[in-house]
Image (cartoon, rainbow, N blue to C red):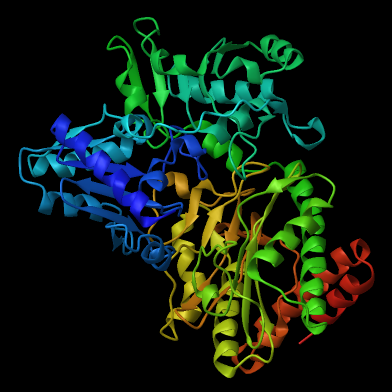
Length: 599
């Protein structure tokens, strides 16, 4: 996008703000459903700024525009905001309100700050309003300023909804809804309003294709003790599915009517809402005659704990995905040996092609991150047809990718050496590997908050003066979102009771080191939390590694590893070979055998 077009849009917005008496307008990379990858209809921040990272906050005033993002996107933001007149700003650590502090310091007291309450979470709006009110600034959440200038805004999709294949579901939707209602009874509520799309899809055993990379459909849902109201474009539901939903007590209502759902409840109703998963705009429409009970949505906890049949399907899916990665990396090395021209864009497309051949494949779970050399130091780098690197000479190639299969969601990062690696590259790689091993083989008592586990992975890095800016692990859905809560292995994450690691939770483990301008190293596996033992001191949990992809031993400095760590690598590679060998033939099988030789 041309910088001049961005500058023009900011100027148009400032005119609208001036007419409405707004001193500052705030835009976030969110939608009404808290999606990791919002539909284009809701990408107002990207349309206004040209910045397409998943984490960003844009503040526009009468005379300035600034965009805040975290360490994953600092370099990307600097590139994409060049000559737009928008200043890139850094969010450091867990200070997610740094943009609000800037507003307080730069906007005179008594002025009005606006944001779109229809895409702003209730909890975030409350925190922001508290900070602004201390500076006597007024927050308005009833404006959608972008709609007045975004004349060619994309329409919402009309893709059909379908049922998740019964072979892959552990419970039918009637059982899931019954379990949810039991939780509602415990909380003494008779209604529960849900906006999070993965919760709705999981509860109803339905999937869709409205959003990129996630098998979800745009909707809201109101669950009562005897009925369910699904707010959705009814044309998206085939007739036969509509009949099955009706048989389970689920009626369809227009998507646009969701905003009035809470206003239409009878007086005296008690409704459960999750303040982190409902927008402030949605709650503002409620009737004053109903009682609101706030708490985490029970489905968030329920879906995070995968059932044993689901875990078995995930194991099978990992074999398919691992085979695709072996075929891919063996192709990369063969193509380089044959002096073929390889680019970051080309290999990303090739990886997608290998996965598409696997049974049960549905889509990518996010856009492939393929970074060579200095680009590998950008955590969320994405090559484009206009800007990419050729893979040649000596350097490190980082590939972070994943896929949606009917039997699970994958996310894996591997770094391979192109040419002979340097001692410094081997050092960094081995230290990151030590972090992966430390957490993967760690043991911890039940009830430990996920964020507390972060130190296990970081300790080998911290001991050598190294660190990385992002979290170490995120939850992963079951043919749902590749980023799922409530657990988050990050010392910046909230350490409340709901972030406890539990059996059945699938999480990524992805320590890293980034050296800007040189190289980046991230090694990522998915693992499932499981019970290890029970002693007189209680139950102890640990992880079973799920991902089955060789780790490039050419990048390992063996002298830096303890014998126990060498044993872990060898046992892991023996498992990878055993599980994948029957899935591969020819070049890929030879590559697997070579790359899983014992240290």
